[in-house]
Length: 173
Image (cartoon, rainbow, N blue to C red; front, side):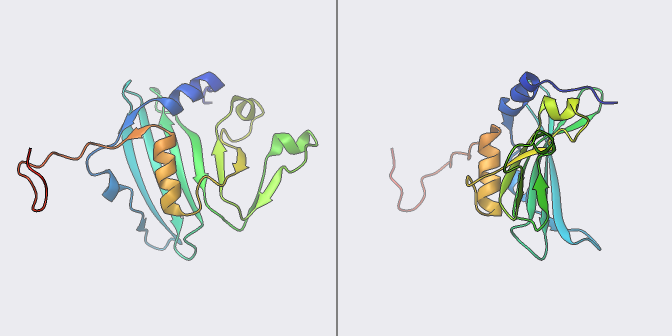
């Protein structure tokens, strides 16, 4: 059985700087898998502290708004944890199970962009680590979700190399 990640541990993992490799854009372009109804790709990234993360991207081939951009954390013992998912609009309903059990209102939603977050309390209840989700207006497409995901979880893009020579029409210093 996997250990329980505490909320402060999850928070530290989310804000750790995660440098992207130079070829990150090509690696995060989902590709069609054989006999599957979605495109998928993965990219492993090492955080500045040496911790291992993975970005997993899935997108339905028939509905461009049905996608998941997932942040995984790989512990030193090899256990992988889903820390977050930026999800698109998909036809199935999502229910926040702990909140439903508590009789809270508005615990279920359907066909909305939404973000799943890992929580200690969902793990302690024996539920999926990222079982809690909230609708969002932070993004409204796959591309805006990917940009927001990378920014929100501190993925840093490599700096563009400086040109050796001035480009036509550019100024010389």
